[in-house]
Structure formats: structure tokens, C-alpha cells
Length: 328
Image (cartoon, rainbow, N blue to C red; front, side):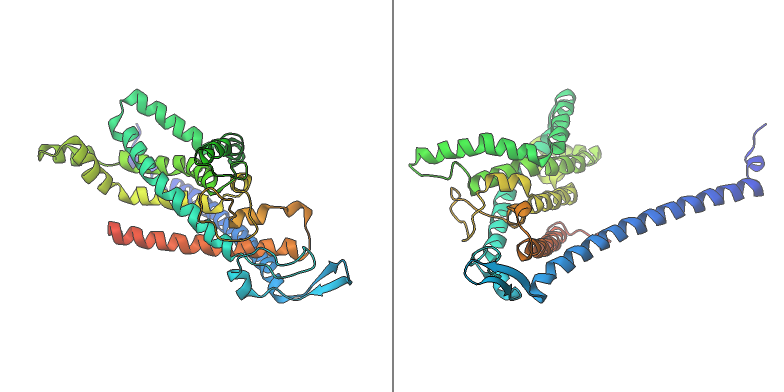
């Protein structure tokens, strides 16, 4: 007959402790490996990204032949509103000030459109729609979240830009074949919508039914309950989804470069004009370049990492203040 006392023997305890020790060592080794990989990547980007500001590069001028370019000025690099003043390979006067602002504009515009749509869609799936419809919509959202960015870029280039060009034509506005800030915002909306929706839906679905029934018992209408009770209770997960969505929008390169028009200078405030983000600046022409024009793209990557870090810190600060959340 089996008994707990017969199972708990020194031999079994020793065997169990050995298994726990192996599992802990595996987890520890995996964590160290992952952290090491991240650190190595950051170090490589930092070395290549800081190099243009510290060393001279060999360039070529059609008049004088081989020239030595001065290190890039970090201040003008961050403030200039033109990508390069002079021919490629003959100048080190790079600037990404305009691209930083354009990136922020595009992400803010897409986020303001995406968040309400994503939250309402998540609420519909989690609490309002019948189970079968909710299951179907959940599958669609998961499918959209798994689509590669190149597919969104192709859709944007083949469909969205044509719609934007047609829309601009209604007002007599000429566009660069629809390549514009508007196309960029729409593509970012399409890409971040499923991410925010999926996370928000999970958070809304986790709200206890007792809270909802208590609100209804206090004579609140279903809509009042959904918007004032359910969404309030799920705000932590909703903010987490927004942070993930904003992070994806900031880091998207392929799709954005296909629909933005990749302008070389100037801040874009007109939604029907071409624009250029940090990621599109990094990606454009990277295969055909070398020397300082190649390494400067690592510098842009460093700036992008800082922008993403600062954005996440600010969003988390807002999340704590608005929701009175404690992540500890």
C-alpha cells in the first residue's frame, strides 16, 4: 500500500534535490547566455556607432581624389535637418534631427488612431461578442499579429499608397505616387493594432466576473460597466499593450521604408508629403554603401535605441501615474 512516508525517503529526497539543482543550473545558464548575447550586440552597435564620431575615414572626391573625412560632429548630427550635406563618400556632415522628429510624429499619430480602435476591439472580443464570434475574431487578431512586416509593406505599397494618391487627388493635391506620412501612419496602424488588441484583450478577459456583476447590481448599465469598471480594472494590461505597440512602431523598418518616400531632409508636418524615419534612414541604400556611410547607420541605430528607451520610460511613468500602479 502506497503511503507518503514510504515515498519520502532520503534517496528520493536526494534525487529530487539533484533534479532541482540541474533545472536551476539550466535556467541560470540560459539566462547568462541570453544576457551575454544582448550585451554583445549592444557592444558591437556601440563600437560601430561611436566610431564615426571618433575617427577619420577615407573618402573620395572627384576633384582631388582620395580625401580624409573629419569625424562627424555629434551636435550637428543630432540637430541637422538634412541627411548628408555633400556627395556620399566625400562629406561627413550627416544629420538626423529631422528623422528623429518625423519618427516621433508618425508614431504619435498612429498610436492615437490605434489605441481606441484596439481597446474597443479587445472589449468586443473579451466581453461583448458571442463566444463563437469572439473566438473567430481572436484568431484573426492572432493571425494579423503573426504576419511578417514585409507583407504589410507590400500591402502598403500596392494598395495604401494608391488610396492615398486617389484621396489627395480629390483635393487637387499632387503626391509622390502616394508615398507619404499618411501611408506610413496607416501601415503602422495596421501593424500595431493586433499587438495592442491581443494584450488588451487578455487583460480585459482576466477581469473577474464578480466585479462586473457587482457593478450591474448597483444599477450600472452594461456600457457603463464596460467602460468605467472593466477598462479601469484592465488598464495595466492595456498600457502594457500600448508600450509593446509603440515599441514595434518605433523599430519598424521594412514596411515604413516602402511607403514613406524616404525624404533626405526636412521635418514633415503635411500628411500627404514624403517623410523619413530613423529606421528608413538606416535601411535605405545599406547594401550599396561602405565606409563612413555604412557605419553612420550604426550611429542612427544607437539614437533609435535611446529613443525607444526614453519612450518606454515615459510610458511606464504615465502608466504608474494614471493607473496608480506599482510594478514592484
